[in-house]
Length: 402
Image (cartoon, rainbow, N blue to C red; front, side):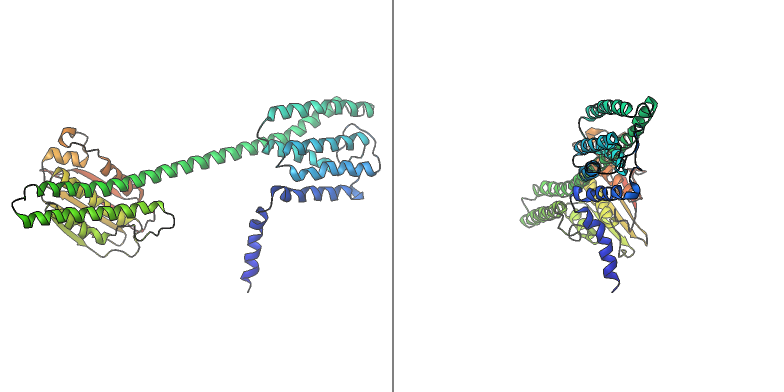
């Protein structure tokens, strides 16, 4: 029963922020107005010019109201607020009321410095120029009771809240720029992630289909084997469409995460698809997958997928070994392929590899895998094996939601 009042209290700030900014600023002006009309505070406010104090009358109430009530629009119309407060302050000082409402002047200056977006210098010059005739009039009415240095000192004191407001404004602008850059970086990272997913899905399935279609050209004399080859191409195309559909669902914020995340259990299907494309693959899976692996299972799937795609492209027909081990805190993957040294170098992304050995190869796949594994805090390597061929290894920490 006590939880209900606590929740209600916590929602008060949220409900208050829903009000218009004018409504939220009005209580400050009303509080200052009420305090200025208290008799004990009469003639205890700002005294500029040395004029003798005067009892409050109807004009004093008007001057106090002009200084306090415009604070309600200090953020919506800061220049109008400062103009009205300045008029009220001038009447207050010239008549000798010296009300507590003079406190509204630095508040208005702080608001102008903080919320005025355009014509800031012109506004500062205009109100500075307006201060000069007020100072001259107060100096004459006060018969020199206030020295010129006192007026200058008060002007400098008023410049302080203006400067504080300008600092607040620049801080807000810097924070807005930081948030914009973070949002831009996040969008770029998301685009890169989707591009990597598209690369993995399209490259693997299309490569398998090309290899299967090439093999079918030599099976025209064997209708049964030709039918099997064409069926394999069809199945691969269907799986490509399914994977692409799951990937494109990433753009739908209402779509769940379960259906679009390839589990490690699908590795056997991936290996079987590669075998049907003519690649001899030995598959070994050890350990029990953890219940909560975060993104580790998806990354492990992509590592095997990219490695098998490279094997089809650069070492077709060579023996390939896929070893996956599920540990309590990590998943380790090793995919090795026998093959010629030059083609293996291209597949592994070796800096010394000849581009001619692999027409169309970009190296983006392995670079993307290295980034994926690195984001999860794991280790990734791809290189030429001793004696020919290449090997891809990855250690992927499990449990990270990244």
